[in-house]
Amino acid sequence: MEAVHHLDHGHEHHPAGIMRWVTTTNHKDIGTLYLWFSFAMFMVGGVMALVIRAELFQPGLQIVQPEFFNQMTTLHGLIMVFGAIMPAFVGFANWQIPMMIGAPDMAFPRMNNWSFWLLPPAALLLVISLFVPGGAAAAGWTLYPPLTVQMGMGMDLTIFAVHILGMSSIMGSINIVTTVLNLRAPGMTLMKMPLFVWTWLITAYLLIAVMPVLAGAVTMTLTDRHFGTHFFNAAGGGDPVLFQHIFWFFGHPEVYIIILPGFGVVSQIIPAFSRKPLFGYASMVYATASIAILSFIVWAHHMYTVGMPVAGQLFFMFATMLIAVPTGVKVFNWLATMWKGSLTFEAPMLFALGFIFLFTTGGLTGIVLSIVPLDVQVHDTYYVVAHFHYTMVAGALFSAFGAVYFWLPKWTGKMYDEKLGKLHFWLSFIFFNLTFFVQHFLGLAGMPRRIPDYALQFAEFNAISSVGAFGFGLTQLLFFYIVLKCIRSGEKAPARPWEGADTLEWTLPSPAPYHSFETPPVVK
Ligand code: CU1
Image 1 (tube, rainbow, N blue to C red):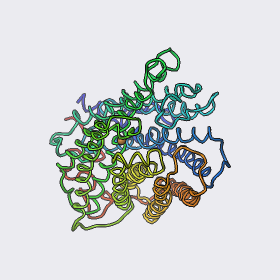
Image 2 (cartoon, helix red, strand yellow):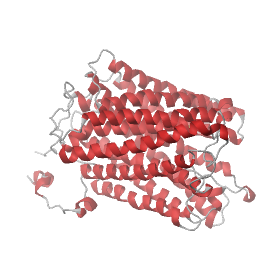
Image 3 (tube, rainbow, N blue to C red):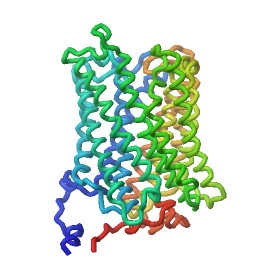
Image 4 (cartoon, rainbow, N blue to C red):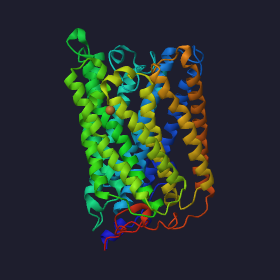
């Protein structure tokens, strides 16, 4: 009976108001905090993107100074990667993983609270770095030396922010690994887990492996700046290229940290709206693991132009191309899941289909960029910018939107406005392509990235891209309205919100967990 009492959350005292959110150890509360924080950062990083696109609307310098423009590219990248996309998926993980595997909560609820509350100060440090003497890093989100060694104290704030963000990610990952390995309900074997849980388990291992590497890179930058070391200073026997190797040893796995949970989301949505079990469950798990392992041996495809031996270039080229194999397995399985399914096209499904179509486009330009002689031609051009925005925006962000629409009825008990959800998808789809498809042409024509001005022949495509970007930004206000409307005045959601999907909607292909969706388990 003791045990029953302790697990009976309803009778415990909980603080109310703001203190509820500051002190909460409940995975759903913390998931909600992550998601709202992510949305706020999405807006901040989005405004920075619009500053960039406003300046690039026409040739010449009109709106910002070059130094500030470069600071915008740095902060836009850092804030979107660490502040918007990653916290969004940690938010989904917090909400869904315990419920999907029948656990009462995350394994370390207090550490979970700390993982979240480290984020706002880190984000604040990044934004404050704009206002200190010398300003934020103007080196891009990759923080390459020698610029980051020489510049003002904004870089120190950025380094500290990266350290804090890394601590948060590592603690979150330890929590996820422990929860998944130790708190599954009886019968929920590893190979019965929903794909979203699998992708997050693998992602958590990736995070634990590479966040310390990033911390090492920025710590070496810090000691080069203040403590007389010369890790990245050729004059002192160091090498600026060393930073690039260390950074991309983190950075390439990082792009899979961002996209793998998106794969997981899509692997939940496609079966539900096809009314069929996921095709090739085991191959999905192995493909995810393969992508994760391969992600450690491809980092130098970001650095073909630094002057590495041809044997090195070939190794990294072929290793990169290998990743297309497990990724192709995934795309094939999603399509095979839909084959002869009873398909419907509500907002989550639209975003999942948009994901498959556009992410695959980004994957194809990735194979193009893996080809050494071709990459040398388009290195540091807008072709690269177009490529990774197809994976980050149409990939990670679209799957995040799909996840929100898919699970919002479960989270809030209410339905969102389906018409507006579909409108959100179509506007996002059109404006996204308007913004980024033309950037392929700009890159192929030779327009360099991270430059506030450009030659006249690039004017038309830049104008189109900027119009698309402002359209995309405004469209996301519609998303905000849809979510608010759902929370405030949405119609009551049925227990199975996606008709005909029944239990398929979130535990495919596993049986329903031992414990029900809403009630924490009671120890008898
Ligand atoms: Cu990469």
